[in-house]
Length: 352
Ligand code: MRU
Image (cartoon, rainbow, N blue to C red; front, side, top):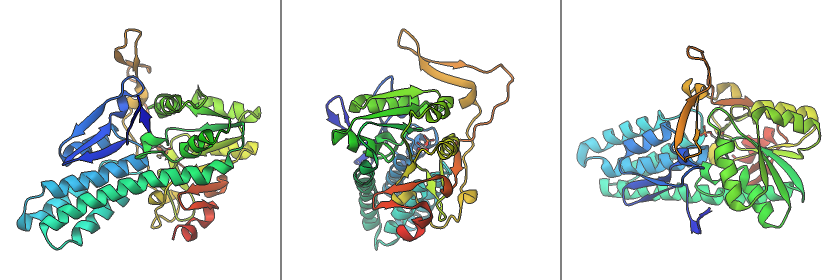
């Protein structure tokens, strides 16, 4: 993705330092943060400095490479690797890409015949994962663009753009591709409370790409669908179960139910690293519950440009903050993957 004339990936590695776009500062400022050791990378995943399934997968892969570079020589090497992998596994629970990346780098380390070779293999595998992630986004764009007719009004939820991956994104990739092909598209962006990934991140990405859009309150999509003002919905996914159920940002299920009721096609875009063949159905997907403070407080910029955090609930109010929900396979028209399109219930066969 191009920012101020320069191509950026969302997360990358230079030497032993992981570098990533500092996402909580967007859309107010664009900054890159440096994370010299794997504990910092793990912390950045937990605190959502980096977020989005594909981006946290890439960050976890690089975090594993850092673990290998930091690990002491000799007999303690593998113990340090095991502990680092465990730390990274506990950063966030829902997105399958995170676990996929950790296991891939772990296997590369285990397959090496010396400590020096294991370090090299870890860095190479982390780079391979990031490259695959970027290539998958582009391929998702190519497979998904034909589903978007000229003049389409598209709803998306949360941010499944390049910030949620290494580049391109999942749900936004077909939109970017269709736009570049010269199709006229208009995107309705759910604000995506409580953290506002739609209002802050998706809107910022679309602005940069020159794609026309409007941010809508989370509650507005049903109204627009009923009035025939939305032609299709595309969202991303954080984990896809073997039966085709998907977990995505909280609120996705409501949009899918509304789309079904109103005859609006509902598409889910994701790379194969998001598919969890060991997870039988949506019931088994671990759903993250985050701090209630994300509901109590909002952060924004005041007229002087200062970032402020303000409370919007009464002192003493209780809040719940489930971060994801499950949409059953039956609600979804088609999956868009880097290998092509497939019916949700066929996913296990398609991605085998
Ligand atoms: O909590 P986040 O911001 O890490 O949530 C993940 C997401 O961005 C969405 O659920 C997205 O639609 C799928 S991730 C490509």
